Image 1 (cartoon, protein in one colour):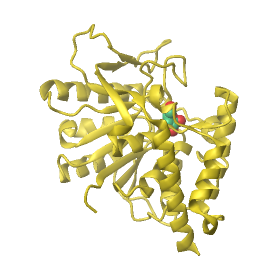
Image 2 (spheres, rainbow, N blue to C red):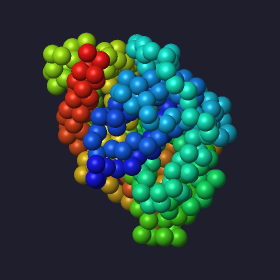
Image 3 (tube, rainbow, N blue to C red):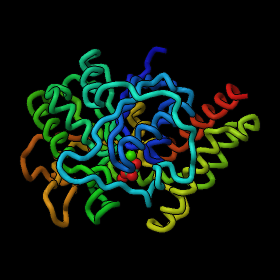
Length: 337
Ligand code: BDR
Ligand code: CA
């Protein structure tokens, strides 16, 4: 199909990562070429198991899945079972994946894909930036080889969700994020025409609130034939856990679904408005550990290295998610039936 975006997803699956995988598989404008796994919400082998299981659920067992970094560059790994459940998918259970992981390291696959089709690939990271930091170390021209880079990470003019200043993906591996942002800073300074990464932080991703009503809308969209759809059952079981977490910590019975919003924006930039800014990451200890420090006033005089999303159309995204994933659930129910 013409006009499809060649996509590499780097994930730490995770409830909202799982929804992002389903969204990508459900999107006719996405050409999903590989999914790479990084430790984050759960440990890396569990991420890889969840990722393959979700792709099989979506009927995409053909998409290569590679294991990457099993720990952050410097600090010890911390996972978050209270947010995503003991296995990363809330109360859901999925069959053990029927296939093995692809051989090789995630970082090498990102580099190989970018080299194989220079200027064509869009990379989307939905977890800590460890794999990407390793990829940039192995191929310093990676920023120039990609068509685009989009990340879920940071809190630019918003409070953190892990510490008062810091968003989860950046908190897990601030050293990796610092290296990645520095790599793009250098590349953008050398080639001002280079597209800056699109950074979607909590400022905009927390506008995507998936509520119980959306479960009903998904079922309606999928139709009567998909009432027992494994996809709908998975989403319901996973999301119910996420709803309870957000009820405890964020005061509403629903869930921020950061990661699929980021995939949606990678496929359709009209969903966000951005502002270019120079951003660095505090990797040292202390109150601001992992904080994204954005130079909104240009005080440092450093060239901008990120396009930070400052506005985002969450309503259009949520409606699109219901349509696309609902239709995928219906198609898969027909296949199963
Ligand atoms: C990010 O942290 C993870 O828990 C989610 O999957 C998302 O990528 C939000 O801070
Ligand atoms: Ca994630």
